[in-house]
Amino acid sequence: MELMGSDLTSMELIGRRSGQRGKRPPGMREASVATPAGTQAPDRAAPTGTQAVDRAARLVTEVVHAPDSVTFTELAAATGLAKSTTSRLLVALERGGLVRRDDDGRFRPGDVFVRYAWRGGAEAGLIEVARPFLDRLGAETGETVNLGVARDGLVEQVAQVDSRYLIGGTNWVGRPVPLHCAALGKVLLAYGAAPLPPGRLEARTSRTLTSRAALEEDLSQVRRCGYAVTDGELEPGLVAVAAPVFRDGAVVVGALSVSAPASRLTPARIPAVAAQCAAQALGLSAVLGHRPLPGAENEPGPQPGPRHEPRTART
Image (cartoon, rainbow, N blue to C red; front, side, top):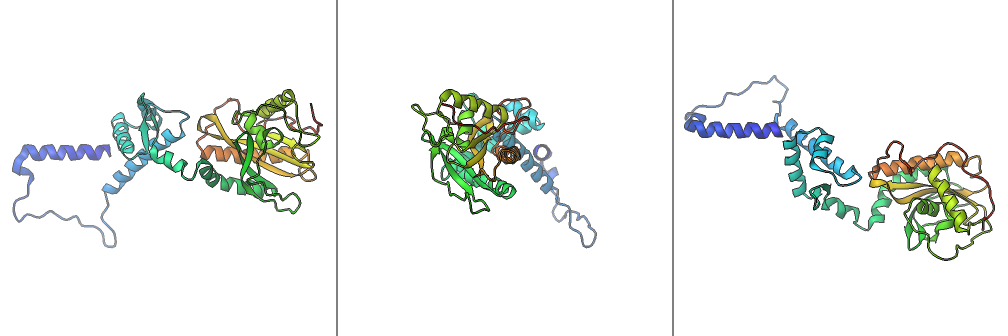
């Protein structure tokens, strides 16, 4: 694009300086270029146009995936584009609503992305993007898979893939449950996506953690291991694991869970299922723009070492 603009400018200057010299005498025709039979003349404009689109796409990708707003210099360095090219393309992208500048002159995703993200509500967009990951996790485990978000001091399942088994096939969509006794809720609490409501913690079963100190200890373990476990804390005989879903900037926007009866999701099976859950959560997080930093804390993914120990309630 940059070369094309320079060539056009040079031709205009030559035409202005040479007056009529740039015009063909009457009756003179342009010489045609012969091409081999069965072939088409090369389209010299197409590669240049494609290159411009590719460059613009690289700039948009950098802006959308950045954890925060980015400067012009950072974009030029990240894409390897000349500053003149970067400037021209950013002006066009800003004009089209694909990027926008904040008060400090830094670049953020434009209004087009904002409108799309909130079309039908943010959760509707999250469900649409998450669906392939839920389906894969359901196919891998054969168990009930849920996507949960925080709402009004509770955790609500907004999407589900049903278990292939008849036992344990509850439909959790639209059924809010307390944060402190659900694996999804523990993830949201552990990573700051939801505050723990004030007051007494409800004992849903004899295994429910009703002590805030015991719960905080459990949440610390969730952050260390990268996933949460509940064993009979929400309902007797129900076991679940859950892993965080991040968006850009390491912000947790939800969680993925796998749940099943204790007869199927045994202590010996939990680490493998947790790894599968965390892998799909990480894949979804990448689509949402999350870029894990080497050595960073609070990243999804099971860590080495035992995680689940059968327990009774700690009050």
